[in-house]
Amino acid sequence: MESILIIRLSAIGDVVMASPLIRSLRRAYPDAQITWLAQPEVADLLSTNQDLDEVLVWPRGEWRRLRRAHRWLTLVRRIWGFLSELRRRRFDVVIDAQGLLKSGIWAWLSGAPRRVAIDPREGSAWLMTERVERGGDPNRVASEYLHLAQTLRLPSDDFTMRIVLTEEDRQFARTLLAEKGLEGPFAVICPFTTRPQKHWLEERWVDLASNLETELGLASVMLGGPGDGKAAALIAERREAPLVNVVGQTRLRQAAALIERAALLVGVDTGLSHIGTALGTPSVLLFGSTLPYTDTTRHNAVVIHHPMTCSPCRRSPTCHGDFTCMRRIDIPEVLETARRVMTAAAPGG
Image (tube, rainbow, N blue to C red; front, side, top):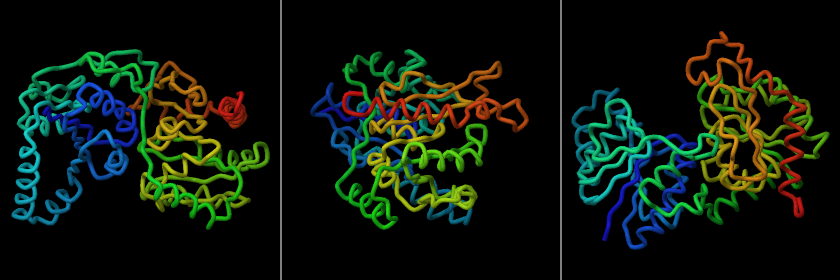
């Protein structure tokens, strides 16, 4: 029996985009043992996928805490124990879907005789037996992973992102909405991500929430991670009508269950927004500094992006904090796009 390891350690959006690889591998190797190596923050998204046999969690944060506390003996024992667990599985093939040195090291340490990486960087190419250049249509979401699947001759005719929720996740969403007094349709807003140049303006989220209520009849539920609490409070405090702020109060799949129930998602280039696309929720995605995909593969998910001569700046903006590309996205455009994707999602739309 073939034993296959997929490595995509982080981040949320990238794991969502790489998720079609699971089904492709299962279709190609129905009897294989398929494992995914991930960091704790994304493992929740993978653990319920029936086409995966196992999610192996790299406790990177725990190791960092041990190192900072100078608990060297404990750290060495934990590392050795994890490495032993990894090698005990005797992987035949590793697919490094991240292509960084940290993922490449784990691919090499696995002991697998065949190690394939997508666009390996930071010197990780030397740890691989095969390299797949980044390719495919850059306008399509998850195009690099589709290209990887096609290069490896995996089935790719139904290469769609997949998030698997449980009844417990859905019950959590129902209970939370009832506790917050939300009985009608609602929108999820996802304002937060890792870099300021990917953010929309704080005051526009406030005005957007008001307009969603008055023009589309949608209450607003704000989602985000534990580190977004302060920024979320600033938005919530400026809202005249109640804004349901559950930032930092949900696990990842619980947030996904709320997104699944939403009539609309509006978000920046962040993992929760990509979850919306994966779940088929009508979505409006606001892109600025990053190179957007215009083909979401969903008729009810649209990317708004106003390219500039400096686009995409990614991690090196030259606008001195003005973030003009995001400022060009105004509320009327978002509302009009929201109407369009909601109509597309309606029966007969």
